Length: 282
Ligand code: GLU
Image 1 (tube, rainbow, N blue to C red):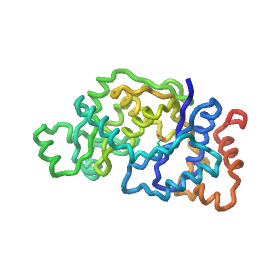
Image 2 (image 1 turned 90 degrees about the horizontal axis):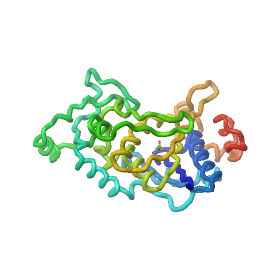
Image 3 (image 1 turned 180 degrees about the horizontal axis):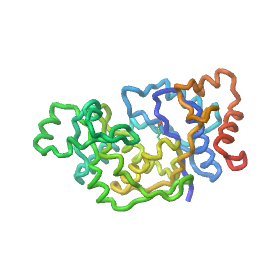
Image 4 (image 1 turned 90 degrees about the vertical axis):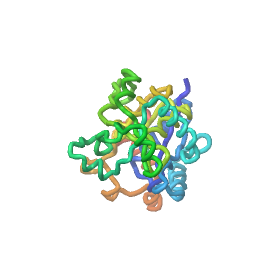
């Protein structure tokens, strides 16, 4: 089987070293196996995506020597695919409209926290069809996955991670996650799951900060009849103090490093060393 990997950044800011690590690992895994490395721009956030950042992403990858195969796919051009999947989940009775504001959810006293903030307390789950229909005409709403019946329908699920091994999918803990946003016709979870399948991605390489999201993606694959790729959640880069590198710590963007005359080969070699990869394996 040929391997297909991808780099899927959101064009909401400049790329940093962590992005370079994800892109490099995905690129190298594909090239080592004679497979394909794809570039997908995750520009579903109309308020934050900028064309300038898309151009910057392409410039950064070229500078690093990480060449991608085929045309660049943009999620903003694929909205009908996502709408169709949401319709299928509606027909299965597994999603419901939610009218709650962020503030209302945060204020719900008992709200436990998951990887994406407060877990939704389920306020809108119990609304009658009549109330839903009436409120949908006049109130902004997102669409949430009805987690309990979705999990019951899918049954036990697992996936394979190159670092963590075989993982049982436990999406329940994240509550009724959003699949279509108030301000965007789709959410990260639904779009990324559909696109990885549609593009034939066989190995998803991304940072360990997205590990929790894979529980959700595995469930969506089962509900929508999509194949499950292999996953490689690589460790996050750390600064000299051992803490995760973050923009707020002043970590330079790739564009700034480039402008400062950094050597891209040395930069990639440094990333491999930090990730514990020998040059030979990379
Ligand atoms: N677009 C996501 C981000 O930039 C990454 C998506 C993924 O690799 O699954 O954080």
